[in-house]
Image (cartoon, rainbow, N blue to C red):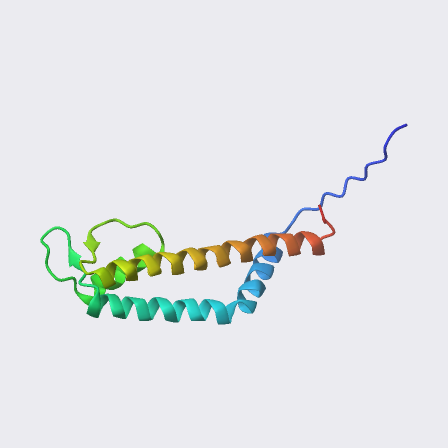
Length: 126
């Protein structure tokens, strides 16, 4: 009454997983490029219409600090050292956060697919 269970463990190689991950990112390049362009447009809009200011002295944020703020917002870290002061700026910050969330989701999905495809090719379907 014993069940014959075959041990199908195969060790994945990091280079195979990385190759599958990069291939998946390549397939997603148009979507990711669109998100990057949207990030750039939102960053430019934040500088000109968002009223970003330094929280320490309430001075206008220079272009480099505005880009930093937009990147930190898109990465959903949000240090709070630069803040938008207009309603458009707050909406822009929300959109930047969503763009970052979507980009993160795509990268994570590509990584998961990379592991799955490498496992499948190695004969480890489970």
